[in-house]
Length: 68
Image (cartoon, rainbow, N blue to C red; front, side, top):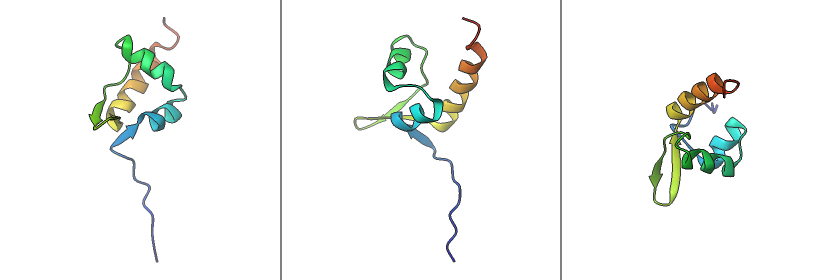
Protein backbone atom coordinates (compact mmCIF):
# COMPACT_ATOMS: atom_id res chain seq x y z
CA UNK A 1 0.00 0.00 0.00
CA UNK A 2 1.31 3.42 -0.92
CA UNK A 3 0.44 6.50 1.04
CA UNK A 4 1.02 10.02 -0.14
CA UNK A 5 1.52 12.58 2.57
CA UNK A 6 0.19 16.07 2.08
CA UNK A 7 3.51 17.83 2.68
CA UNK A 8 3.89 21.59 2.33
CA UNK A 9 6.97 22.60 0.34
CA UNK A 10 9.70 24.49 2.16
CA UNK A 11 9.87 27.08 -0.61
CA UNK A 12 7.82 28.16 -3.63
CA UNK A 13 8.77 29.11 -7.15
CA UNK A 14 7.48 32.42 -8.45
CA UNK A 15 4.76 30.60 -10.40
CA UNK A 16 3.63 28.61 -7.35
CA UNK A 17 3.60 31.74 -5.18
CA UNK A 18 1.59 33.72 -7.72
CA UNK A 19 -0.99 30.95 -8.15
CA UNK A 20 -1.33 30.51 -4.38
CA UNK A 21 -1.80 34.25 -3.81
CA UNK A 22 -3.80 34.97 -6.97
CA UNK A 23 -1.46 37.65 -8.30
CA UNK A 24 0.38 37.98 -11.59
CA UNK A 25 4.12 37.65 -12.05
CA UNK A 26 4.31 41.26 -13.25
CA UNK A 27 2.59 42.42 -10.06
CA UNK A 28 5.05 40.45 -7.95
CA UNK A 29 8.03 41.99 -9.73
CA UNK A 30 6.49 45.46 -9.26
CA UNK A 31 6.05 44.77 -5.55
CA UNK A 32 9.70 43.73 -5.29
CA UNK A 33 10.74 46.92 -7.08
CA UNK A 34 8.73 48.93 -4.51
CA UNK A 35 10.27 46.96 -1.65
CA UNK A 36 6.88 45.44 -0.73
CA UNK A 37 7.23 41.89 -2.02
CA UNK A 38 8.14 38.80 -0.02
CA UNK A 39 11.77 37.96 0.68
CA UNK A 40 13.32 35.42 -1.66
CA UNK A 41 16.53 33.55 -2.28
CA UNK A 42 18.10 32.37 -5.50
CA UNK A 43 19.17 28.91 -6.56
CA UNK A 44 21.10 29.51 -9.74
CA UNK A 45 18.79 31.68 -11.84
CA UNK A 46 15.61 30.56 -10.03
CA UNK A 47 14.06 32.74 -7.35
CA UNK A 48 12.45 30.80 -4.47
CA UNK A 49 10.21 32.21 -1.74
CA UNK A 50 10.39 30.42 1.63
CA UNK A 51 6.97 29.04 2.66
CA UNK A 52 7.07 30.81 6.03
CA UNK A 53 7.85 34.10 4.27
CA UNK A 54 4.90 33.54 1.91
CA UNK A 55 2.59 33.07 4.94
CA UNK A 56 4.01 36.16 6.67
CA UNK A 57 3.66 38.28 3.54
CA UNK A 58 0.08 37.07 3.00
CA UNK A 59 -0.84 38.02 6.56
CA UNK A 60 0.67 41.50 6.18
CA UNK A 61 -0.89 42.13 2.77
CA UNK A 62 -4.33 41.02 3.96
CA UNK A 63 -4.01 43.34 6.93
CA UNK A 64 -3.34 46.35 4.67
CA UNK A 65 -5.58 45.42 1.73
CA UNK A 66 -8.27 47.95 2.51
CA UNK A 67 -6.17 50.47 4.38
CA UNK A 68 -4.16 52.11 1.61
